[in-house]
Length: 175
Image (cartoon, rainbow, N blue to C red; front, side):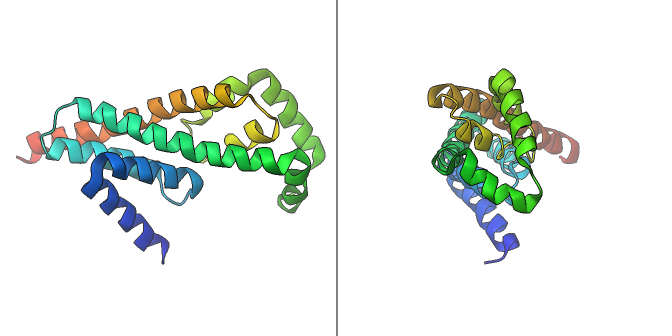
């Protein structure tokens, strides 16, 4: 299956099964980064506007997507926890990431871990990666889940609102 076919399937999933679709798409997007959340959530908001659904559905879809993202992030966190720092270091050497680099990450994450998780969930390209240091540095799981969910809510609700208001504007602009 090509990436284009997979993305089309995700778009159909969101369009056809709204809440379950956005949850599933967000879960997959977190584990398989080629699916861009920057497309998924605005699409969901747009679908709400075009189907003349109540506004609260935009928020509900954002929360549903955040739940999917959080579960996906938990999978990555648990894998990093299982592999551990030493195991991860073996793989990272192929990306030219040294033990000194990891030590810097250790210190920085120890002081700013909650902020990294919270704000990292709102940055494309970083969203999926912040779970790795949280896992291998053994951040408390409950703390990780709370900051992941809150950051994911802000991200997914914001993007869903963009799609919703774009849909409303397109109706007014294009008739």
